[in-house]
Length: 333
Image 1 (cartoon, rainbow, N blue to C red):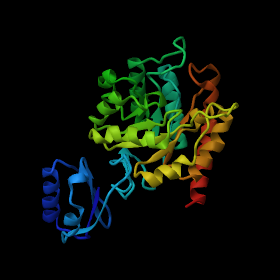
Image 2 (cartoon, rainbow, N blue to C red; image 1 turned 30 degrees about the vertical axis):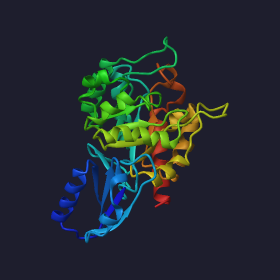
Image 3 (cartoon, helix red, strand yellow; image 1 turned 60 degrees about the horizontal axis):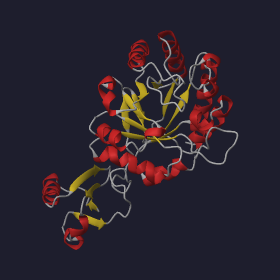
Image 4 (cartoon, rainbow, N blue to C red; image 1 turned 180 degrees about the vertical axis):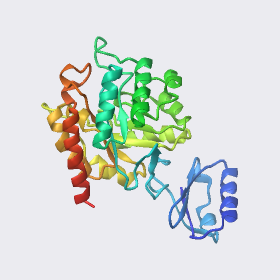
């Protein structure tokens, strides 16, 4: 249920209403917009007398929300959520570039890539320390050592670091990581999502390769309902009948997610296509579709990469792409 308050409602009266609603056993999500404050009621709202609330002098309107996702619903939070990570902002008109190798391999590699992508305009550094792989024989990442190397790269460049967490039992290792990524395979690992909801770190939540948008939003709801509202949604391609690309990049998800949710939406064209030469055109298309950012794989020696070299851009290719991204953003203003 949503209760929209009249403009210029006094804080004292708002607090009295919130306390009364909480006394009924309801959770109350308060969203203060530029022109209006909205109270989102979570819980058993069937016992709430809508007519009684609507009759209050501070209430402008009362309506029920039929969608099962509440916290991430734009009806609960009409204004865009803007997530700040260091000097970078994601959402609300701010555009964020996240770039780096699929996996952290050596100190020299991750520092070199970090310096290159920063020079090109990247706002954050990505790099996998824990790698979920289809084959148990493939490189699984440097794990804790990889996180330490990412921290060295951050110290060298000032770029916040983004890396994937696969298990709640590893949370202590991620204490100094700026953004925790939940990969496609773990999008519905609900125990992990609940634990991440108890942290205050931004969570980059990737859509599962066979999941609907509603399922993605419900996964975000697990995190937010547990207390962490700093969620970034990521479209990274879904599995369809495509026989030439790794996945099919569902760019229609970007405007639809913006319509349904207030959370920022970024796109991963690297995992969506699996082919380096396909990354730039799909990245530009994502910008035109209204994405709040891009996460792109960049490696200084893709031919010898230990993971996903085929979809990684070289630093000079990424530099060229960023210039085109800026041109598209300027064109669609």
